[in-house]
Length: 283
Image 1 (cartoon, rainbow, N blue to C red):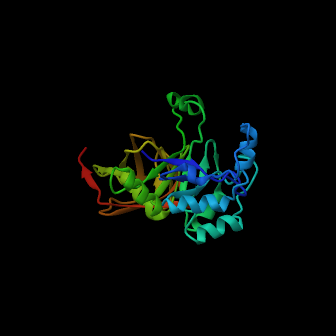
Image 2: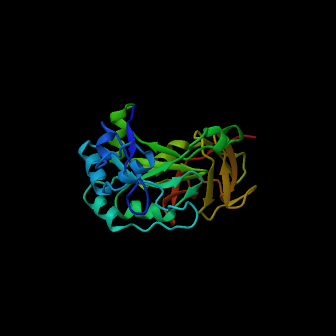
Image 3: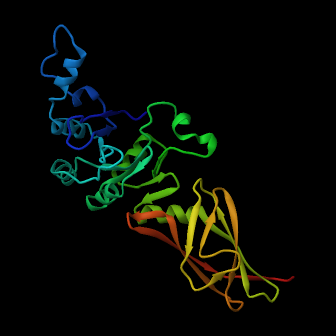
């Protein structure tokens, strides 16, 4: 079980979360409990506890601390890192930042993560039932945080988060550092066959997709497609067959694509290259 707490309601420009903590009570102090007890007054006094003190207390417990939905209105605000967050990131006390939350995504938060060496985090922020908000029965899904752990354990997840080995799956968009995202793409998208039929100079290439995401590929070679334009789709858990004009029957063919729904930075798409050795099938 992973213990966590929202720790800094008083932090400027957004809440922060701490996970892998031992005692959440240490993250929030009230100078004096009102008597007779009044929940509203208690809440007000709790807000006087300095945000930095909460961050420090979380780090003393070895917590992984991340910045929640820094675009605080969920609609208009653009993430701009504050001195508070910048200093905690520089001091190793802020470890991650949400780039997707619920039905919203922030390219600016993605860039903040890269600029300040923070883990990319995606969450649902769901307060009700998952099925109500994301309708998985209709093909929807909540934002998913993929964590590349070396072992299936809480300790393994903690180690991977601190090492920033994460990819966020938001709607049909994959967001991650190149070192993490490209291996995921390569493990998911495979060429099953590359075949010329008889004397044809059209190469049939069958791609398979073993992942839950649909891949959208943009052809970056000079080869043209028979049935498609340059943009093709490979559905989740399915195959797609492409007919490619190669001019001649070639012994080696290199295909290069941009993955339009996979970003390694806010303005940079992941790329994939496939080195093929086609076979010839008799008609």
